[in-house]
Length: 172
Image (cartoon, rainbow, N blue to C red; front, top):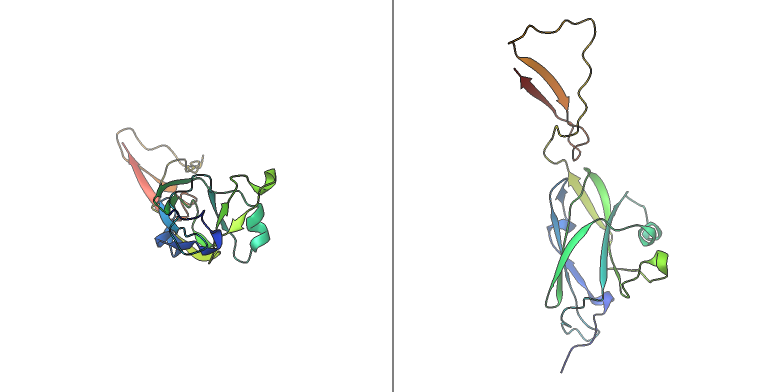
């Protein structure tokens, strides 16, 4: 006897990516599926999952119109393992949904928000990075250091995964 197709209302979500995350680091969510009778139905590749981090109190109407973050995922029997990477630190409502027919609402599909969604998700700042950070222009009133001396430049890393730390870079 085979289980029926997954019943979206009976999905169970778990994983550290529902409780906390670090900007710039992968976060994981496990979606365990069951059919209407509580049986594990096996992989359902026709289902499309989505996830959006929205401002607190955005509401389910905003989630139904939201575009999903970039996700990676795979099926392991009746469970879908989903990984996402939050880009900015802050407090969010995490909406997880399924487009059961694989078609987004904008294209006429039906979106079903999964049980328990939205989840309150605090995203902590990730490690700072000077990559792409602007370097403030030196004042014209200052003279250039003599050749051979170290030059120290404060590079702001704000915006790099929500970190506001400053890093000093030394150049010869």
